[in-house]
Image 1 (cartoon, rainbow, N blue to C red):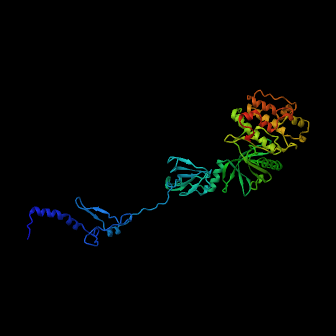
Image 2 (image 1 turned 180 degrees about the vertical axis):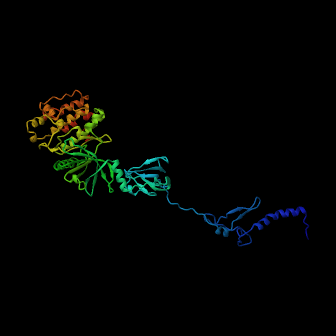
Length: 480
């Protein structure tokens, strides 16, 4: 029996058929049903975007239609997106980047930093000296002498001009040639072109020399040269003399006194002993040179500018001087030249001894003398003509130590303004030294004991360290 379809039922039937018609009209090779085994049809499993099989990827086909499964055929034909491993960047490795950089004559690099863990991006910084300044180049990682690393970006450029117009696109990177670096270093460090040393080690002379306190040597400022002949590190002091015997003696004294850490005293470091002084600068060929740690200022000049020492600063200076005296006497030597000019103050405020040229074995004879450091007994021997035969004892230095403490605590030398002969003649008479200007009672008592006219009554270095001035200050013998 045939059924008659009315208008209403036909409309309902068309509404049910419409989704299927739309599906058939839109079907292409991108969508397909896969036949499964058995009587039912079901969506095939699809391969997802990250390669996982077994879960269908579903697409919305319309507001009232069901989900359609994406065919494995079409998924296989589409490009697969995968996660890639990127090369480490400067940011991910925490290496700061320097842009608009250039190498300075000091071997440092200045530039605009970014990706620094503690410095804001865009700030201009200057690094520590590089291990190899000549290796600096764009897209290279540099290492400083302190171990810091930076990646170099774009260097500074020097605009090229043509027909009066700047051409930044053709600019040259600010990579300075070695000859230009050497030229700039000569200007910046006041290098004279004179060199101490040989092919293995070289020290570049800077500025004009000064005479040593004895007047027998010349004192130069210098810098150690790197393999490219450029100055590197802190400035050094070079003592140059044609008196080879005196320089050899001083080098030997430094080696003897500073050979052990506990008893070396507060002396500067002996960096090098060069003999002959130079095979490069001919005029130094017949001389000898000591290369020493250099201070910021000598102690006499320091107190003349700053004034007397007091409190902790005075005690620390006294301790440094006493430790030097102890080291010398423990080495069997008499300094004979202990005075403020023979101490330096480092840039961090330490007081250190220098100049051991006149140090002589105990019970030997002196080679020279400084009037302001001379005890009365030697002054009498000198004026009587027996100076060269005077027998040195440790108490010689104890007198010098007392005069040193007086000058440090008052800010003036006891014999300031007097000539060497006037000082010697004054000492000959065995004067009582006026200590009324010394404010600290314990220090005044210590100085008085060191300046006893009878040398046998002066305290030795052990008794000096046991005086109340050192014990109460906390710098007793255990500090040495």
